[in-house]
Length: 166
Image 1 (cartoon, helix red, strand yellow):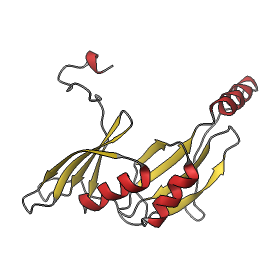
Image 2 (spheres, rainbow, N blue to C red):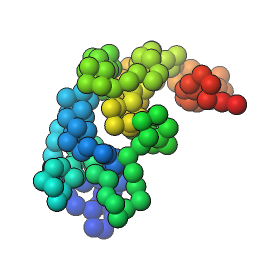
Image 3 (cartoon, rainbow, N blue to C red):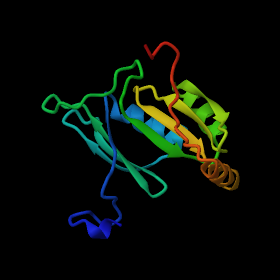
Image 4 (cartoon, rainbow, N blue to C red):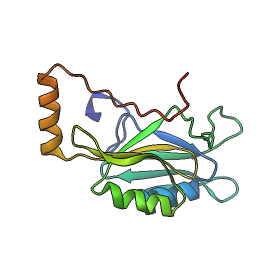
């Protein structure tokens, strides 16, 4: 896919999400220990601490970036109001969430098997980034999706926290 775009480095995607963090080192640790990421690259800032990192989740890439006074991007507010949610497929949602909670994550939407078959939840990491953690139970999920589509139903997943709608 990257071949259609000029200038994309070999092995990279044309689109790579980049999360701005107050503490890149802490975010690397959380992502690797709780979510199963593999650190591919770390670059220091002027103070010697990590200012940039590249993590890999299987073939997918995620960049982490420190806040810079010369750039407008900032780390998310700790209240979970980030407009960005990273969607992560894992082999075991329950074990992943357990590790995330032990490392300071907050469960925002409980782990549940959805009516279409996926087992998923929402977690806020200690830096304030939001994650949807999902396991696709393929056979069941595909069957339920096709069954619902045949009935003309549309699937919309939009968890709402109590008190957020007026």
